[in-house]
Structures are given as C-alpha cells and as structure tokens.
Image (tube, rainbow over all chains, first blue to last red):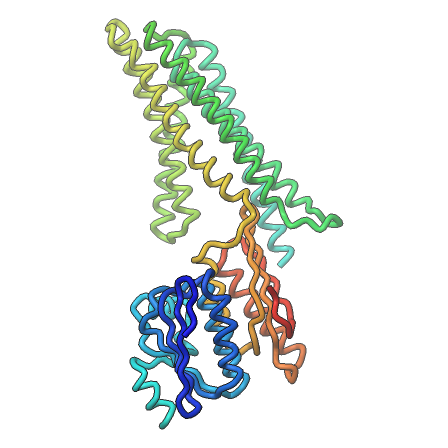
Amino acid sequence: MSKNPDLEISIHEDNGLHILHLAGRLDTVTSPKAESQIIEVIEKGETFIINLKELVYISSAGLRLILVFMKRTKKRNARMIFCAPGEHVLKVFEVSNFLEFLEIAESIEEAVLKIRS
Amino acid sequence: MTTLAEGSGSSKEKALRGLFVAGLVDVCLTTTAFLLSNSSVLLADFLKTSIELIAITLSWVAIRRINRGGGKTYEYGLGKLENISSLFVALVMLLSFLIITANAVRNIITPGHIEGIGLWVSIGAQIVYSGINGALYLKNRRLSRESPSPLMDSQTRLFMTRFVGNVFILISLGLSIAFAGQRWASYIDPAASLVIALSILSATLGIFSSSVYDLLDRTLEEERQIMILAELARHFNDYEELHGIRSRRSGAEVYVEIFLEFDPEKRISEVQQAVDRLRKSIEEKIQGSRVTIAMTTEEVA
C-alpha cells in the first residue's frame, strides 16, 4: 500500500487481474504520484478494476489522469472497469462526458463477473 | 471566418461611435446644467455621464486598434489593454465618488436651497432621456422575452438602470424645487447625490475586482478545465493518447494547448479534421478561448 498526502492507493493482483483501490482525493496534489504508480501497473497487466468506493473527491486533474489510463489500456487492448463510484465522483463523470467511454460496475464482484464472463 | 470577424468588429466600432456621440451630447447637457446651478445631484450627474463617456471612448479606441490589427507584430490581442482601461475607469469612478461624497457632506453641514437655470436644463434633459431610455427598456425587454440571450438581458438591464437614474434625478430636483420653502428640503439634494455616489462606488468595486482578477496570468478555473476534458472525452476515439494540457488566462483571453498523439496509420487529412472538430468544440464551449492542438508522441509537462 502506498500513501499520498490525501490519497491512498493499494494494489492487489489475483490471477492476472489487478484491483486498485483509491481512497481519498484525486486532485492536482495527489494525481502526479498516482499517475506514476498506476501507469506502472497498467503497463504490466491486461485487466484492471479500479475501486472508487472510498474516493471522495475528483478534480479535473484526476479526470485527466483517468483519460490517460483509458487511452493506455485501449492502446494495449487491455480492459479497465471502474467500480462503486460515490455520488460526487459519478456526478463529475456525468458532467464531463466520461460515462460515454468508462465501463462502470456497482461493486468489485460485479466488475469481476464482467471480466470473467 | 476572417471577414465575419472583421465585419463584427466594424459594426461594434460603428455602434461605439454612435454611443460616443450620444455620450458627448449628454456630457454637454449635464455640464451646462451643473455649471448653471449649485446642485450636488447635478454635480453627481455630470461626473457620472463623464465617466460613461470616458469608458465609451476607451472601448472605442480599443476596438479601433483591434480592427486595424497587429498584422506583422503577431499580437495575441488586447486583453490586457482592455483590463488596464477598465482599471483607469475604476480609478476615475473612485475619484468621482470621493468628490460627490465630499460635496454632499459639505452641503449637509451647511445646507442651502438649490437654484439656477441649470436645474431647468437638467429637468428638461431628464424628461427627454427618461422617455428615450424607458422606451428602449420596454423594447429590449420585449426582444429579450422573444429571444432570450445574455446580451439582450444586459441591454435590458442597462436601459432600465438609466431610466431609473433619470427618474431618480427628476424626482430629487422636483422635490427640492417644490418644497424650496421648507428647511428639510435643503437636505434632499445632498442626500440624493450620496445615493448616486454609492451606486458609483458599487460599480467601481465590481470593475476593480474583475479587472485585477483578469490581469493576472493564471491557469483556468476548475469549471473550464472540466469543460476541456469533457470535449476530449466526447472526441475520445479521435486520438490515440493525451500527452498534456496547458491552459492560461490573460485578460479576457483564454489560451489552451492540447498535446495529442494520433494513430500513425491515419491520413493527415483525417487527423486535420479530428483536430478541427476538437478545437472548434472547445472554442464554442469556452468563451474567448483560443485552442491550439499539437501533435506529439512525448509527454508534455
């Protein structure tokens, strides 16, 4: 588990499936560190679940990061599912048109099922 | 596109020239009225119309410079010149506020009845102007209801404010003249001029804060950053990778640079179309923005 000032990132791997838990705030302060850590994981795997259950805030810097992740996964023909976003995060995804290309699941279990099916 | 921009600039210049002439007539009238009377309200009215004329003149000069163009000097525009002009107007307004307030306080301490032919010049002018501004207010309100837009709303508010101002001065002068025999009536004129001074102060603070804020080169507000990302999301399939976004506000202008990687298999005409689509959509969403999209395969800090 790695710790940013206001963001905690924990990464688990299970049979090639990478599950990343983001807790706290994804903003201008926390996103540079998060970018390097998550990109490193994305470069290795093919299936990813990003658990946003404990992500309480996302700013434009966080959105930019997600756009970069999605582009990287698409380029590598990999798959990334975002699960359990809170009300604020979901609203930001909605107003920023991100729901047009993000794959969202309500829980980790649902995301795992989607990937396994 | 260039022709349209020039056409719109030229019509703006024409409109401002018309406003300048109207403002000049207004200043001549208020100067005459003020010089031929001892009214604090007419001093305030003279200063208020003079400020409006200065603001119109500065806007006219700025628009003329924009229309003549920078050409060989590769100008980015006159955003800062406009802000500095606004700050100058704000300083003149502040000075006017102080003059009106000082004069009103002096007249409250040593009250006296207002007199002079200037009062009747002003009453005549206020009747004519309240008729014109009232009619323009009603016309703009009707147009605003038929096709609502921020521009029509601001025009409606402008003429309503002017109409209220004319009526206010008319009532103030009328009451002062009607009750000239009463001791309390000598306070109407300085009190009314203080109301005008406060309205000038309120407008000054608004201009001052927005101009100082706009003068600082800074990154864009969060709302606009999200607007840019929303357009990048909308055109998600048009590019391969996002390598960076830079944004800066300078005066009223907003500069956005986006660094994208495109599929090397795509034809240059397809890439050009994708770039144009994205650029146009962001420029439409963010008022006053100039978007540059650079092609790169490397991360941009």
